Length: 202
Image (cartoon, rainbow, N blue to C red):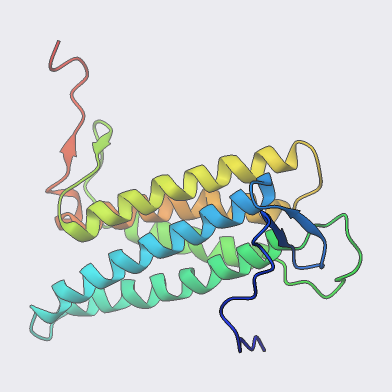
């Protein structure tokens, strides 16, 4: 159980921070940047959930409200998963001081795949790429998707020079896909999507 009794410690005042195994690295270290981006994605998902809450508040009981409630529960679980991913990245595989370190599992990505298939089956087929936007919830889900993609790039950059749990990369890859289909669903199941028209303004 995590117990936080002090919010500031002064330990990072000289530009360094501690990883989960106790080692000290620069705050601009690629590993710190990667789990910082995971945290950023988590925050954007929090905003998307707040917007979904606004939409739910305006609905009477019914299928639409139940669907939004289901998505809110899903996103809540994903936010917890992202903390798992951050904890995983914070504890290098090359260090043996934390053999009990929390690691992302294959089951977490598998659950995302099942949810992607269920949601995508309810969407209108795409004929072009989607321009990010639409409802506020959809716009924030698209933003979260792009932040997750950035996190994925940063994690693979680390993996090029030192071992990283490959399940973190798989999870982030699937999560960006899930956020895409959720954003489409938030846009009237894709009916309100604005599609890219190549070269439309040349």
